[in-house]
Image (tube, rainbow, N blue to C red):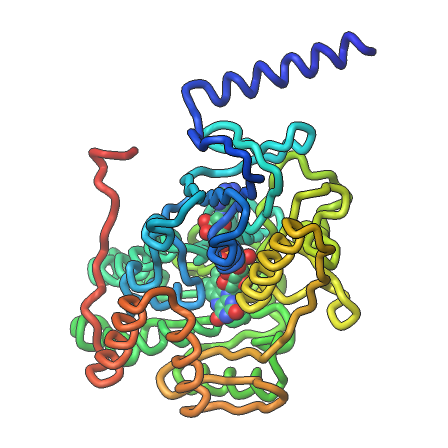
Length: 449
Ligand SMILES: Cc1cc2nc3c(=O)[nH]c(=O)nc-3n(C[C@H](O)[C@H](O)[C@H](O)COP(=O)(O)OP(=O)(O)OC[C@H]3O[C@@H](n4cnc5c(N)ncnc54)[C@H](O)[C@@H]3O)c2cc1C
């Protein structure tokens, strides 16, 4: 038994050595305690920012070299905004910051015994670890949906979707048969949450205002947009008034909303529904569910529903002292939220700010303070002059809601330049009903790496 254990540990060490051969994070070890933050999204970024001038060395790791603003990804997918308008390079954000290190790497595992993480650039040790890696799309175990549908959770996925939508229009003009042409012009969006509603509205506006001008030899009435939702209403996290209003806005704009409809499978050509019906489409946009980013080394019992990591009221993972989780990846309950907090930006931001305070308290030898989420409301936009808002118990929709939606999103985007670019784009779009970003940009086949 002891020999087997010894052999197992030896093999593990050898494996790690092999995996990290020629790789090094090159982060100097100092006397300061090191906080490693995995993921620079809403939660991780604010935490790293708030730890400025703290007595810690801060290491931020992200698989991309930029912070992104997911609420406006749908505008990148529909050629309304350039990716650079809603992204910000980490190295620029943290210019001149002392005792701070950014490493672009993918984290795959946690080795709590030796307080290190396994990453694509080698092992990195920590004194405190914060998981802020958010979520991945959830296909509920269906490999076909994973393979053939288009998710929209980050910039690369949004650009892939933009290429597909534009390429399909080009291909429709030269399609061999009416059936093939129709399939190219049929667009299904699965999931009637805010993301599904927003992308459906944006595609409908493209159909109404842009396609007739760009594609005069295409009958744009042939473009069909279906929004498929498994439950009995869209925008389930908002009030039923907001759901009804958003649905009537969408229908008014030509989107077919299918409620109580579950997707069964999709093979890249035919979308099959659980009720037995089928629909030929070459674009299925997947906005139907998320699961927490997974890491090896986490015990089964700390992983809750939706792959989220169970944390206590201080955001610390139950059985792992010094390891915290914030934002979408964490499952934190309180009486008002038996199924955990909603996976939205304000939760991640509030948790990031709160944890920064708690780290400072730890350094001062004070006990940590418990976290509690302050919900200010929610909103979603459907299109020009159309949005729905639930705020401090008030429900409203239409132009006022739309202006509020734009103001809140504009204020939340990082960087003055990005705010100005987004605002100018919106003003330009509003008055011209047009935008010149409809570019199909594919990676060069000569340089795959
Ligand atoms: C399309 C879309 C629209 C949305 N709209 C809204 C909205 O209007 N309002 C709202 O409140 N919320 C919205 N959300 C939800 C909101 O974006 C999330 O709740 C929020 O981003 C969660 O923040 P986070 O810090 O937990 O994770 P994220 O912001 O997702 O950040 C996670 C970070 O971790 C990095 N990462 C992931 N895995 C690894 C790994 N293995 N190694 C290294 N780095 C990794 C990622 O690159 C990313 O930078 C939207 C989400 C999407 C996808």
